[in-house]
Length: 544
Image (cartoon, rainbow, N blue to C red):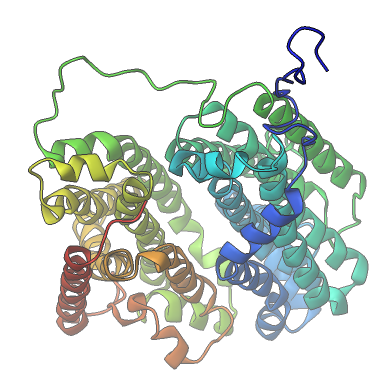
């Protein structure tokens, strides 16, 4: 009791622990983790099946293509001698079936695990703070570091499931190699999960956090590609500087380097410690890198101008990335024949993926198709920016002014649909530049991908407009179609499965004759989906 007032002295909350007396820094981690897993109960299993299943099923497809040791040795020799292929897939470190699976799928599985991990962490940290939900949770018995811990544990669960699926699927090729590959892929995911945890403390919005971490992932991939292009052994200094290259340096099925996993674990521990240190030194909703305030008098007169201001950085980043990817892919065209050699089964796969004419045209069509599938991620993300504006509460005061819902949505949708045209043209321009010819046919092939891209964008509009609680499922649908188009032909999936993707109905250009039926039908379908989504938006209440 106080000697003067006769009341108990008030105890100030400790910012290192939490808002309530007796709350530890990790209090509430378990229920927040369960909540995160429940919210991601669709996305995480889908990413796990796509990433882990792609690798686990690779031994069957590659075993059918290269059934003999001589065929596998020939493939390994041709790939090792081709710098363009090394930059894309990495070097072939062993010509066993397990070694070929690690070469063909390991790098891309690590990238997919990294993308899933950074999305999970940002979704359950900065995204929660930006929407205001974290502030309400923090008013209860929730420790300062509990949300970040829950996000990292959720990412760890996803990456552990990927590692387990890869190990179980490839155990028949050698348990040590399968375990090493699974841990390398899952470990890479955790490296970028902990990296995203740091970026989420530095930036003020989930969009910037995802973009910055994605840029770091892209830079890591470029470092690895540059290192592998210049070194057939895979031990370039540049690959050692890249976390994507660390997964390769584990050398699964090629004399495993288990100590490299300790390097991956050390990076995760250090980055996690930095993220914990940063989160203890800022308030909920704040960041260390504040957004520069705008002018006192607003200069944005239309909703379209506002949408452009919000999305121009994203469009610029995608544009540069597609131009660079096109330049890289175009330089690989000359080595297309080395990929298949005299293997007729491999030639059939390229024809299924990219056309039915000459191998060079099939390879060009494959690269254009890959750019088209990746461009759908831009279109879906641009559409779902509307969902982010709505749930964060920024759309409500804007719509309180004399601004209609359709007019507000139209600005973002113009960028989603029109921006996909820009990035596909730039990708085709880069492809034709380094290939050295056929500018017109390649640009035409790039534009033919737009109906499928617009169909996925229209589906995202439908989900957001009519079923806002399921808006994030647009990412899952895009990922599913991407997986079908990317690895479906290599796994010899039935044509009925390949036809589930809108990309499976497009003519494979250059190489095939133009088919106007699907090219006209898919935009009509996209228009129907778009109309239905906007009709749903007009009838429902806003979410916040």
